[in-house]
Every structure is written in C-alpha cells, then in structure tokens.
Image (cartoon, rainbow, N blue to C red; front, side):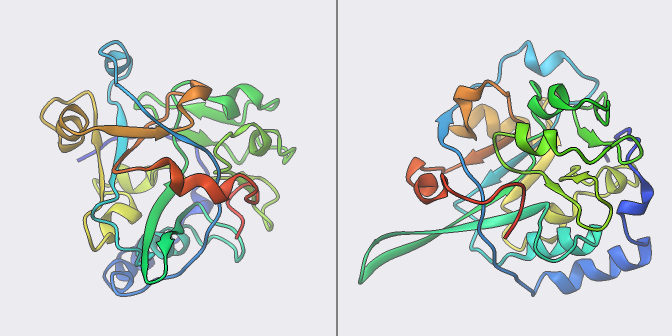
Amino acid sequence: MFEAKTKESASDVGSEENRLSLRDFLKVGGMATAAAAGVLGATKVSAAKKTKMKKHLVMVIDLGRCFGCHACSVACKAQFDVPLGVWRSWVIVTEKGKYPHVQRRFLPVLCNHCSNTPCLKGCPASAIERDENGIIHQLEEHCIGCGYCVQACPYKMRFKHVEKKVANKCSFCAERLEQGLEPACVNTCNAKARIFGDLNDPNSEVSKLVAKKPVKVLLPEQNTQPNVYYIGLDESMYQKLAASKEGGHE
C-alpha cells in the first residue's frame, strides 16, 4: 500500500505478533494527556511542493470526527514501547464556553514531518534524515543525545528517550508502511478521523481532502511546511498551550 525507506533502529519497535494483536484491542481503550504549543493558520499546498518526492506521505486529521477516545495515543505507545511520561502522539483536550454551555474539543498532535525541517538543520550528529517519501527519521545509531533537535522543534513533538538516551519522535510508522500497513494511530482510530496517504497521487483520499476542504497547519508563520493537515481547527484551541512542557512530556 505504502513504501518508505528508513535507517531507523529496529529495536524501537515491538514484535509483529504484539503489534497486530493490540490493534483490535486498542479500539476500545483510551488514555488522556495534554501537551503542545503553537498557533494555527490556513495553508495551501503548492504544485511545486507536491512534485519534489517519489511519494509525498501526509496525514489529514478531521477534528469534526475526533471524539477524544485517545486510542491513537495508546496504539502509538504500545507499538513503540514508549516509556511512561512521554509520547510520540497524543491528544490535547480543551474546553470552550461557560457552564452550562461548555464544549470539549480534542486535538491529536504528532511530528509534522516538515518539508523545511528545523530539527534536521539543528542536529550536529547527522542523526536525522528525510527519506524519498518525505518521512523524517531519527537515526538512533548516530544520535549523541545532545537534545538540540528537541529544542529546535517549534511544535515540541520530540523528546529524549529516558532509557535509550537518544531523541525520539513519531516516524509515521515507517516499519508498518513497509509491510503494507497503515500507521498504528490511523489503523486504530474508531472515528476514522485520521487519513494517511500520498499527496502526489491525485486519486488518494488525502489529495481529495486537501483539494476540497479548508485545511490548516500548526505554526504556518514558522515556514516549516508541515505535512500534517487539520480540518476544523480553531486558534482558540491553542490558547492555553503556550507554556506547555517540551518534547512530548505529560
């Protein structure tokens, strides 16, 4: 279904047996957390950007469908055996309005796999690379644990692995893509709020959504050209996040 090249260490992933058995179970589970920062803005995908790579793998998240079950966060944590206290993907929960007219809203966040990549530019050890499909990989074997990439990420989507002592983040589940599977968070989303695919393919669902729907990205003023797009975002969802903790911490 999808192809992705990576040098990422195989030790960052559990066994195939565990991954596949957890998928269905996680569809009924949930886990809460909140941490991230940024502001939102409308974005357009230029034709030039869509032709740079063999594939242009992106994720579209439809917030009108997300109901905050947190199964995506749990699936990601189980897939990669992420230590307690940190996350590769999580859901921010915000509330709007005053009692009794209060609305709870949910915002899934993850590495944006930016085309103009601050973490890659900031790494002194050449431990970060972009593959031919646009996925940003963390190369554990080269990482020296300096944390510069964690500081360089304006989205605070990176963290230092407390056991491995190296940087860690979402990889769009590149190992699963090589097996023809979807990312764990996409596969386990009960509401089908996460859509993953090739933006270079005009017939893909993500291409059709980006072409027809008003999509937004995080921190457009940073010019990072993120590859995670949102449908139904609202700037007020980020108001309380300016002082959030760094790098995927609870």
